Image (cartoon, rainbow, N blue to C red):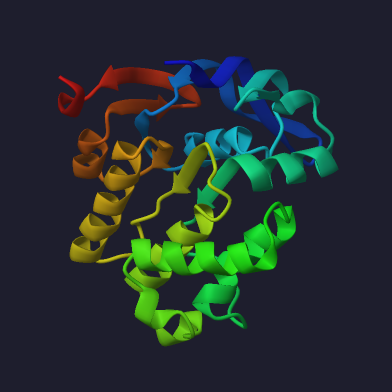
Length: 232
């Protein structure tokens, strides 16, 4: 399978006053289309920074970041924004749904931004995605009117709005009870079976072992990169 993610000698540092604080060190990583990758490791070791590089939210201090055929390290901010909307679906731990929009409107919003479909088709796709995640009867509800698990499923539907090649999730089950977390993970697994490439940061080792590949980050470096029992 072709690589959808290519990182070559990537390092990232942040400025803390006058001091450069390194977070990632010389990361080289290839992920093929159709993989389901779990990234694990202690807090503060660079996992979320790595995801931010994959999505173009952040830039490397050095090295090359090629995602979905685009060199993100070379793109300008306005180019990154357009690229991200068309190629990557992002799922956050705390959902990040707009509170003043109902669930249906939240899912339509990314399609309005990219504007590559007529408005009627955007509405039809949003309804299809709500049905896909089991929320067709909650379309008119505000985020505050549904449970955390339902908000996360709506956030997954929003991430799928523009049919992205890559779905990236940062602790998507960290704010959910175990039963709801299992249901959300099952949805990710089904999306992967349908051909989506997923990269997920998680502290849940049981969920990580259910992905097809487990990458451990320690002290800003890749410590382990292993296929899991699911792929054996």
